[in-house]
Image 1 (tube, one colour):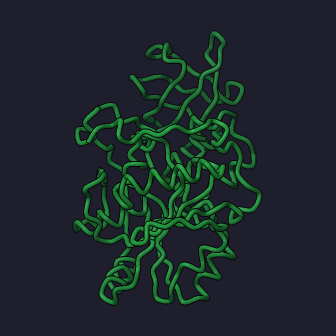
Image 2 (cartoon, helix red, strand yellow):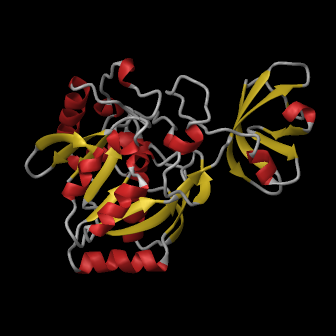
Image 3 (cartoon, helix red, strand yellow):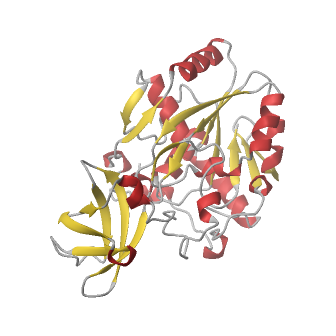
Length: 329
């Protein structure tokens, strides 16, 4: 399969730069794979597509405020994206500009805290603890959102059910759920469970190989509790539909189908993959040429996904992280 097969044109004005005030007021495109039909409604109406006994699985990861702005001792802005905590107060990080030298110090909080570049893409802080470091940061908005992070992002770029700190990007399909909508879904007899998959920088990592099968996913930590395992197994035995909220949840469920319950997954799902645990997928609209878009194509078929995307474009849907949603049944 060629990388160019997963391209599509998108007008830049359709890339959502801000969230909607009401999360569940986003538009929802419903794609029926068997009927090859498309319906349009609001996300709050997604409840009409659940049957009692169905299992809705969400990713309860919580986004870390991992984007830090500092300055060089000699002056000049420095931007960090903390990718992963290592030993002590040392982090893997993306550091911009790239000309920062080894052993160079970066100043934060008026000089009260500094970080030293201890290796390529690595920084070690002089701080009390990791919490102090993250208190310096803001939400790490994706690069296609062309603005600085604002106070509203600390609320809207986090799902209402986020619990486990560990991600540098939001599981954006879940951003449309409100506490009230979740309660209403439960009241209809739908079971709700949570998995954890901490999203790494791999969600933004471009696929560079023209033969997509040569692409290697970076490992991401996931965990599925015994209670959730039991509920997944029960849903399977009773032949109830399992709804995965987002590509991260889908990948965690499919990794579980392979026999893993906790650890690191680098599962790469692209057309030809046979899904074992995911019956329906709730997802946002993804960038072209990405592993996320490839997963959607694997789930619904390239032709049908591209048809749905074109209709979303024609109807001026809002795209990407703060955009509208799609339900694939």
